[in-house]
Image 1 (cartoon, rainbow, N blue to C red):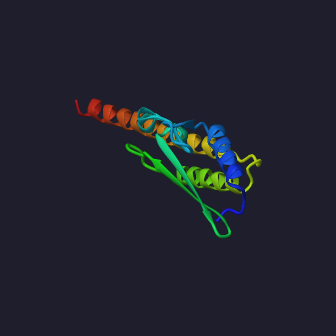
Image 2 (image 1 turned 120 degrees about the vertical axis):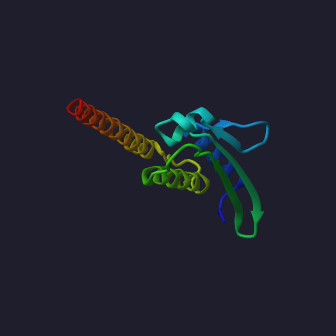
Image 3 (image 1 turned 90 degrees about the vertical axis):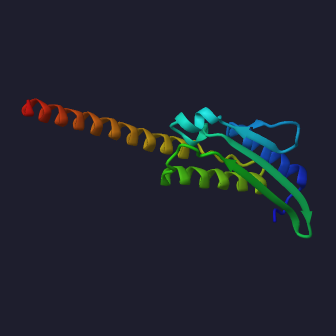
Length: 144
């Protein structure tokens, strides 16, 4: 339950999603999207993954009942702990936006951490592949 006015919660959520790079989706109120299918496959950051977000706000006895549904496309990804952390921070930011509409909360640091982690994995794979190629080439040279 969120003990705040509906209009304030909507304003805070819209502002959060806009700052986080989401665009309004369709004509439905409080429906957003970010990223693309291509970004899901080739992006180094979870911020480029395809995400659809929808928010439902209902009146409750002690405030508002707010539910946020994030549909995250992680196709083609091996989700790392840093990327899990990114989504946890994103969810925390959404909660802060509902409770404190004027508060600034950013997942930028988590985004950079996840991107750096993925880049490190890619560089490591390339270096190992080059080293393996050199060893195999050397062994092939010795065998001939």
